[in-house]
Length: 178
Image (tube, rainbow, N blue to C red; front, side):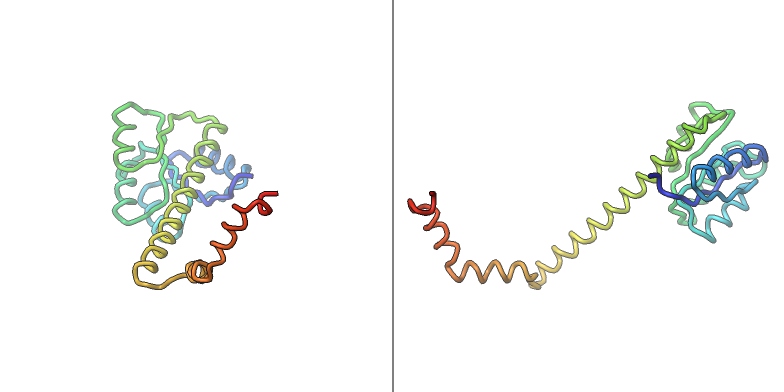
């Protein structure tokens, strides 16, 4: 089951905003729309989004400038850029600035939803990775500082008791193998 996401859609064309918003809502996502980059930056700073989908070519501030500003302001949501006037240089620049993906308009609903699901999956994996690294580092720091976890104390008690030698001896004897 796909994860429900809160998406920010930025485009200067009202029809594009309406159709993308509708497609995401039908797929179970929550969509917030913005018709310009300045408003989108304010929204992104004031509330968390799981993904930002932005047009590149817009009047005033364009999507690439928005991407730069988002990164400069510390917004961590992944950004997918889209354009109906795309060319290779634009896509390369967008990815160098930190865009997760670059889509050419017109975009099929299936392609759009697949891109969103992949971005959300990647975000979940990165979050899990950070959590696991944090746990690992805490465990290593605890071991270095001399704080032995309960498991280590039990293992030491078993070793001191000589129980493991008795089990190995019993397994090696003829009645232990039968």
